[in-house]
Length: 276
Image (cartoon, rainbow, N blue to C red):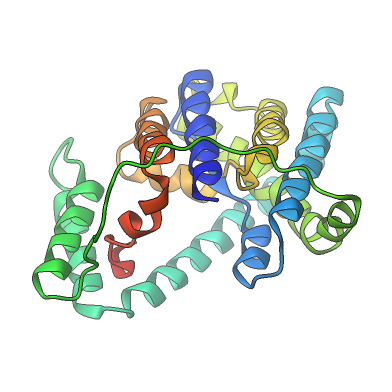
């Protein structure tokens, strides 16, 4: 349900910004998201997957085993993972641009130009301009029957068959990706981008915060979530330097989560996919 998903992201983002004081991202777990998008997971299975991965992360963080695992992985492997992820993100971005080329390439050009202006919030400006441009040309989404509809997250209790199936089709494919991209490589990049403060985002703390968030929030309909090296690099590139970035983003998601979650999908559809 939109309420649980948005509330989960909002809560984790705000907590991340307050705890770390860095522009660390919060994002859905990609392998699990892929299974969900193909219609392969029910709500109970999604909750079970998030809780199981959360427990694994908590165990690795509490015991310190995640630190040993990080030390066992050569720096060259971490850099290679960052490079590979960057190439994949660029390819995906190009594919999205080609959905509506004139908006996509215009948005890309505007980003390059606006980033030359000191302290200019390039990304929000481009997204707003692209949405207005699509609406002005008659291709945008029109909101009909929009109204405030307060709601709260509901508890999701998975059955044992759902627990077992989610372990097979979601947890096993996701776990290695989370440990590398969301914990080990993210901690490495944080230390590189923030030499004086980046050590606060250690492998152990990232594992603990991700684990705790999933164990507490997934039973209430949240998506399985983690940090991520791609999101950290992107936020840094667009000027984010403190925990205020995830706090602002989390607050922006909290409003639709509790006030009009029934219309959340329509609101997000206002953003053209070519500039997303």
